[in-house]
Amino acid sequence: MQLESLAMDSQSVRCGLAGWDAMSTVLDFVEKSEPPKFWASFSNPKEQQNGVTQVGFCKAAVIKAVVEVAGEKDSLAILWNQKATEYPGGEFVKRMVGWIRDTKLDSEGARDDLVMCATLSLGNLARDESHSAALLAPPYSLTPHLLPLLEPKVNLRVKHGCTGLLKHLAQGSQNKGLLGAAGTIEALAASGIWRRVSDIAEIVQINAIGVAKHLSYLNAANALRLTAPIPNDPEGDSPLDLILDLAQRSDELTVQSEGTRVLVNVIKGLFALQQAGLNGLQSAVPDGAKKPVTSQDEAPVDEEKRKEAITRLLTLDTTEALTEMLARSGRYPILLNEAIVALTLLSTQPPALPLVLQSLLAPLPYRITESGQAVAPPSGATNGQALSSRNSNPLDMIVAILRNPNKLFPLGLIANACTLLGTLGKDSSDDAERVKQATRAALEALIPKAMEVDGEEGKAVTGAKAKNIVDVAAKKTLEAWSAKP
Image (tube, rainbow, N blue to C red; front, side, top):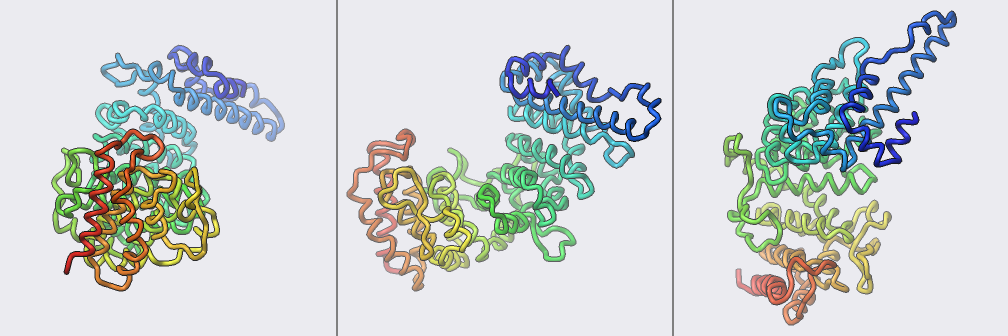
């Protein structure tokens, strides 16, 4: 117990324990220690059991200390031995991988505590991309040993460690294709983590959402996997449907936002900006990426399957999820930009255009207006504080972005809002006219204004170039609205 407290409170203790001499002793205790044999002589069975329980408590405390050590930034170089060649990372990593690989959870007396310790510890080490790549490559090849830990029969404590490790592994650019092709998305869907039965384990659900988010980031193959119907599912749901349903029923803002970000990444992964004709979008994809990214190890995405997946996304549920994200994210320009980019890409599809308009103009759901999350910052706001109003709709946030009170929003975000409005203006419906009427004055005000600062940092886009981004985007939108059909 004392070791756990010291490891949590003292950096020097954490770094001291990271050395292999100390760490190997600690790991031996966790793996091999047993109650003293003379305890078996206790005549009272309750006393015997109490002794076993106390040893279990001690092991649990030491496991927490190990995980704390692995999470210490300054101990990273000690735990992961860069000089090790046969087994990358050295003895500690080899031991942790062995605990995962060799523990059979369906056997009697299986040590799930070893698996929890190993997955949580390796999850901390896998924050470095080179480490995460090494864990999935030979000789470790962890993927087939991790996916069985997601099976429905496995307890949520093990799934907590497993999903946390997978979340870090999925961030590595080399790992997205490997994990996707191995069936990670399908295993998460089959595990039941995103279903209502697992709502008691919110942190596990958030981890699993994080895995899906990272795997689908500009990866068309994994985006397809997330939109494909789950085999034998009675509702014909896809993994993405399960995530969005979880985000819809959750009261936790992290679940709502991160769940919708999976949708955003799927849309980005399925759309090629050159084909959509939207090269003016700011920060929609990294520099030089003009089409969905696939792993070098994967075959090119079938164009017909990509189109089918896009068609499955053209629903009111999709557009409402994105506009809710837009409405509740006044404090988070990154989320605002992601929602706007996704809505713009969807709006290039004629069937989606009226759905986007309808969702932007619809009154906000009760859970947003009554929670203090919505909608647009008031004109006198200084920190992006959201304004709650039962009569507000998501379009109010776009108007606020265009007006940019106290220069709260980056100019790239404002330009993207203009691009979205230009796309929506192609529709000739009454809803499109309502959008134009609500935003025209704010658009016109952008053209003569000299905007100097890009959000709070004032670094990304400034000066004449910054003015040009917004000026050109606003002009293009107004010109598109004035053009005859």
